Image (cartoon, rainbow, N blue to C red; front, side, top):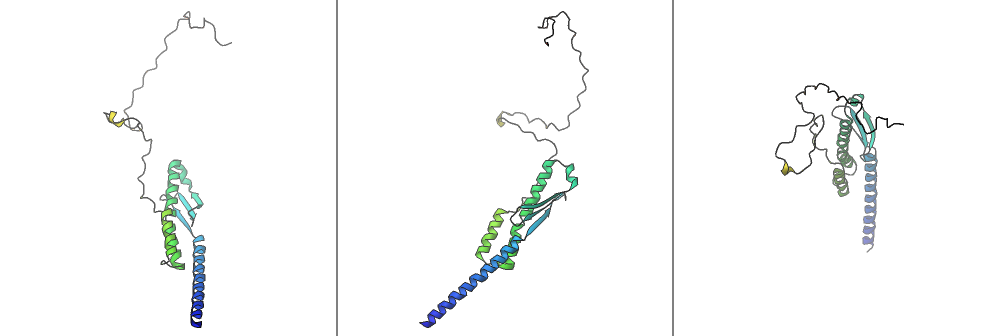
Length: 185
């Protein structure tokens, strides 16, 4: 029986040592992930931003030439760049896991999958929106028999200027509901 107790004690000691080593590896991974950041630059180079490993914006720089663009375009470029940066987080997390705890660890793989859900790949590059206004039409589509009118910003043939029209001359003796007197006092 003493051998069984000795074997059990060794098994418990090995298990305890394994847990301590695993905890140290997880702490090393957490420290490495905590120190990570991602810096991304927009397509046009006007936006440069940095995010932490949690996906939160830590730095944003907008170049002076961006002020020549509409604010809606600049903000859309910021959001595209932010999403592109955030989509790199799972890759960095996987790299940190491979270097510290390994890629075979089930807990590590669960963390990686959660990061991929939280920070998915950005959508394909959007087509540029046409400059100008978009028109909306409200109503029942079945009632339309003719195509919708062209957008307002489309080229229209010039309208010849109309000569100014004179107001008809008023007779001073005409009753204008004020009895010829001012309504201001």
